[in-house]
Image: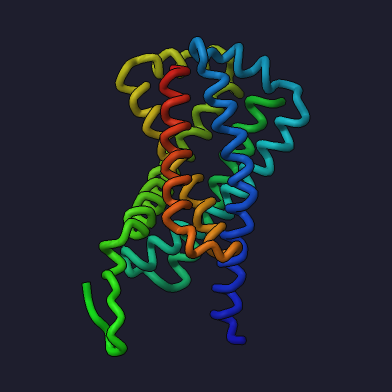
Length: 114
Length: 120
């Protein structure tokens, strides 16, 4: 198996595995959004629900990590198929975007849970 | 519609409902990818102070922002529904059920959209 094929196979697997995790996370997130927005959103309400809650901390860390895997691989397919952008520059840019998502996502988690 | 060498008829992929599902999945994914950094940045405002987050939430009370919020929730539901359909097609070999899966994905999107609209 060439290195390219091995990388594509690994990316395919990572995309599906992260999608399976995200399917659960997104359903929980959608239910939470619908529940939380009844009667309007307020910062106090959001933070009262999330602050100091270990279960939400674990949930959002898993959510952020799955997003940071899933999004760059999805954008990679769009860059390749719609923009014709291939090569290592594309992969480095998208990997950097994944790192940005991890940093911003964990910062947001820190802000609302801790 | 084209007829191939063994005489079976098949439709161009671009004319099938599956192509519409592919486009919805891809475009909703792209929109969500662009929205995510903004979403994280807004939540990160709570690090500065609860008031900063509250200030942003009050801005989202305007009808235009509410419409954008509703669109984003709908896009998230559509992407999740379409993603579940793809996982089922790839791992459960439910190809004969493709139309049913499309209907389920659409119904899931509509259900979430309506529920969120009622909650707003």
